[in-house]
Image (cartoon, rainbow, N blue to C red; front, side, top):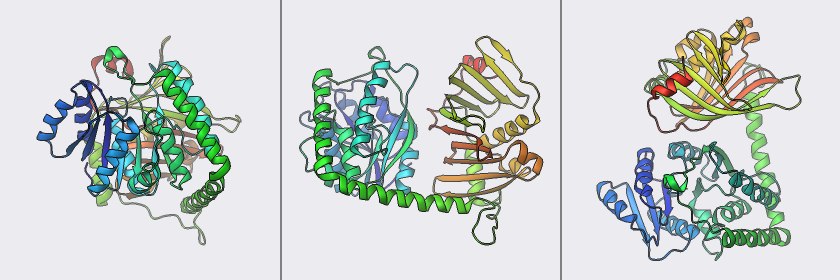
Length: 463
C-alpha cells in the first residue's frame, strides 16, 4: 500500500545484515519508506543504497554521527514534513516490530489523524522474563505521569506520530534523544493534548545467535530513565496537571458520545421507533470486493487473546494463543495459556488435542451452530451466513464491521449475536454474545508473513 501523507520511518544504528531484509519486508507492506542511518559504522547502509537505486519508494537519510534513536527519528520527521508528509509510523530496523501490522496502524491513523497510535506488544513465548518484568515499572510510572491509563506500553516504539505536534513538542527539547525517547515522546504528546490510541501488535524476539542486536547499556540507560521519570513527575506536579486533566475530560466526553452512538446503533435499540439498521446486500460492490479479497487468502497464522465472561463468575477468564486458518483444512486455535490445548474446527466438527491425547467433545447443537458460523465468518462466506443471520455492517476505507443477528429464536438462544471487525482481508476482533453477562471476545493481531503451512504444522494443528 502507498500514501502521500503517511510514510514508514526506520531509525538504524549498526543493525548489521538484518537491515536490508527488514527494509525489503517493510516495502512489501507500505510505501514510501524512509531509513535514517544514525552514524552507523558497520557498513550496513551500503546494501540500502543499492536497494534505493532499484526502488524509488525507499529513501535513505545518513546522519554523520550517532545521536541516538530520538535524534534520528526527529531528523527523519523533519525530512518527512519538508517532503509533504503529515504522519510517520516509526518502527525498529532489527525485525522485532511487525511489518504485517503497518497497514492496520496506518488505517487507524488515517481514521483519527489527530491521534498518537501506539502499539501494545504481544510478546512471544521466548521473550526473556527480565524484559517482561522490567517494563512493569515504566508502565506504572507513565500511568502516574498521565494520571491514569492512556499509553499501554510506553517502551514499545511501534507508533504512528502526527508530525506537526510531534515536532512542536519534542523538537525544541534537548532531552529524550536516546533510550528514553519512546517514553518521553508518549508522555509529552499526551500532555500536549494528542489523544493516544492503543492497538495490539505481535513482537518477534531474536537472540544474538539469530542476529538480534541490542544497544541497551544497562547502567547508563537505566539511570537515564530514572532521571527522565523524576523530571516528568516534578513537571507534572508543578505545571502540567491542570492541562492534562482538561485533556482527559475532553477525551472522556468524546468517548462517551461515541459509545452512545454505538449503543443507539445496535439492532433493536435505535432511538424513537426502535427500527433496526438496514440489512446489507452480500452482492453490494464493497462487500463483494471484500469477500473476493478473503477468498485470495492463503494459510494464515496470528496471535490472539480471548476473554470469556460467564454470569456465574465474577471475573472474566482470559486465554492466549495462536490461530491458524487454512482455506482447505479449517480453523485451529492453539491455546498457550492457561493450558496447552488445540481446538480444531472443520467440516467434520470439533476436535480437542492436548499433550495427553485428543478427543471429540460430546455432541452439542449449540456449540455446533456457533462453530459453523465461526468457520463461515473466517472465510467471509457472506452468502452462507445470510441464510441464518441478518447481516448489518459498514465499511470506511480498509476498516469494516459486520454484525450477525440470528434469524430464528432457536439460533438466537444457542449462538446469540456475533460481531466482527477487521482491516482489509483480515479479521481483528470477534465477539459472540449470548447475554449481557455471557460472551466470548477474541482479539486477533495482524497476521504474520503469509506462508503455506509446513507438513509438521498440518500434522500438529489440523486433522
